[in-house]
Image (cartoon, rainbow, N blue to C red; front, side, top):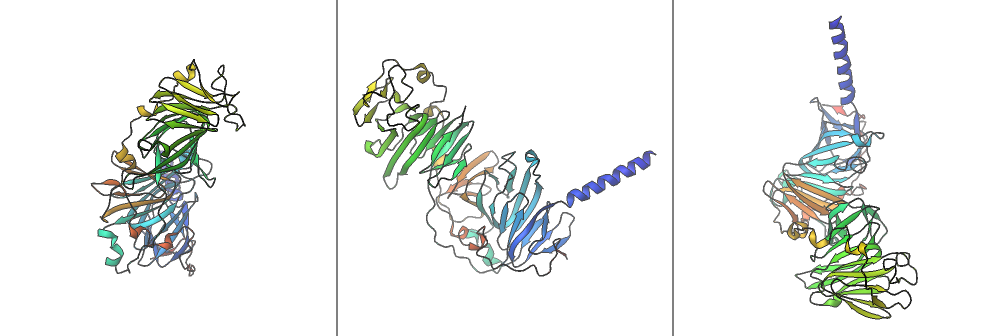
Length: 464
């Protein structure tokens, strides 16, 4: 009887194992050339459009061949020629977000990925791409990766393929800030109205309007060494921000639309004070090498014609408190210099800047960290290095946020940034190498590929 039970249990386990192994992870979309898959059981199959792929598959593209893989969660991966990509683990069930898991390993060549639902719901760390020298973690991303075995990534030429010349593209937007501390939720809306969720290390761009949620706060560091702490339910816009130390270019226009911020100024404005403007309602806060808190509540936050406050309720309107240096609060009605440990508001009755004799306790006992107390490694956060095309892993972000990890080191990459890793290095590059821009066929739309028919290849592929 025990033997019968054992046999039945073993048979059920075998059936479950086979069923699990046979679970489809995705299908081939468009392709051109030759694509084969080595299954987990060692069998090799030739794939065509609509062919199924499974967890454990090693996907291999031939010379001059491209293929798009459409995963069940909506992710799209386009493989370039002479590439080897293994689907190490893949689990996606619509009803179980917390169980999501996707791990890929790039063994050779490269591919472009537009991620799907995995990593955007449930566990943010559920989607990873591994290579020999680093791991790519994503935060809702469109990125390209290339593993180069030769100098200047001449792998294709050595394999007999023609040289791909990178096309000249418009320079990517500069990352002007990064999230250095975050409690709760933070989002950014760009000039086109597109909103994205920000996490620790996420990039900030010129034109972004940053918004914190309820019971949330964040600290953002900017590349001129300035920093801003955003209090809860705050909307803060980076209207303009240009800083290029080499070109002696500097200009910043920041605006508080709602809530409260704590600001420590940086290099912009130290030489020319007019190059730094901080706006709140119809007022401008001029800086003098400064640390200050600013608020915009009530009529100020609602956009009312009169954003002013009263001495009896100074937080119901627009105001400023200085904790380092001094500022000048300027309105159409006049100006007022606010010294250290002093505060001023826009008067509701006159529209003029006036001092307040008693600084509110909520201002003096602000629980949100002062930005100058948050350590920032400027070289790691914003520094770039030239690169001569050394062998290694290259990652370029087209949209979103990528975290490149090597042992205990991490590198945050935002839209327009390129990272490099080898056995010895992990660095952000000043410019993307030309070979990363040469494959128009890697466009997610597939517009650069002359799509081939399936040629009678079944969904399960043709076994060799």
